[in-house]
Amino acid sequence: MSAQLSGVLTALASPFAADGQLDEKTLRRLVDRSIDGGVDGVVACGSTGEFAAMSAAERRQVVETVVDQAAGRVPVVAQTGALSTREAVELSRHAQAAGASVLMVVAPYYEPLTLDETLHYLRTVADAVDVPIMLYNLPGATGVNLSPETVGQLAREVENIQYIKDTSADMAQAGQLIHNYGDVISTFVGWDSLLLQAVSEGAAGVMAGTANVMPAELVSIHRALRDGDLDRARAEWAQIYPLMDAIMSAPFIPAVKAALNATGFPAGAPREPLLALDAAQAARISTLVEELPQLSAAR
Image (cartoon, rainbow, N blue to C red; front, side, top):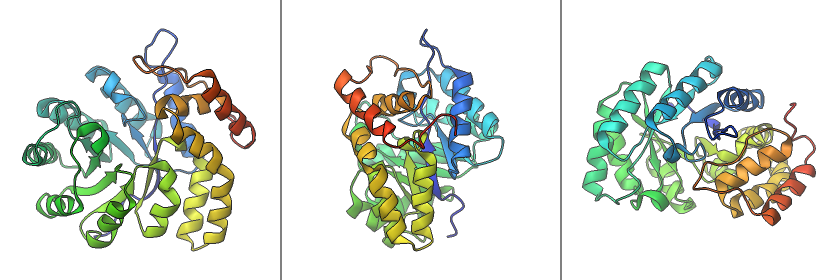
């Protein structure tokens, strides 16, 4: 199977205005920031984008805005999973009509489903659309881990299931997906700090919330690995790793927004019930951003 989607995908943050409403103008700027940084695709309504705190109408607005702003420059992945199969199908059909290139589907994330229920849900959503599907394996939120064997089975049975974002943080599992099932599905690792390992292992790419903050840096490391220049990739990774680690070690969504704000990009605060980082965490991230002067909103 030849993969059409690969490289660094930005899991876009969702900027909110002071009144709590979606800040569409800033979202458009954020799309441009990633594309200008060289990323290979952008993701609307992923976990970093706080989709679970949005209404269905807001999720549609985000997808439409991102597709419009991307304007065909890079593929747009729309995350369309929901608590009910009906809503997931409706969001998926809308995202396809809006022009999304790939639909990413997470399993319902409140009441853990049985494996049979999860597979029925994923098959139903995939059968409702014609565009490629990316399975979103997020066991920490869904309570269900899609094993490599299950993923391979689904990809063989359902023609448009072509990708998986594995956010298990388990490189052994990602390795099995890459090496044992690479003929039927392309694996994206969804744990930012595993970029170096994942791409070296042969992953199709990474989906990273930190690409909101440092898109060009992550792209440069990916390109170095793709070109076989491991020494350059390691050297560049060492430069950004302290900031990467600080973001990954803090509550992730508030940390991404704090880092963006520290670059001078007005990402605002997360939507409640999430709260901004405490002062110490925010100060540490701000200090690490200052140590990387290339991370400016003007770029």
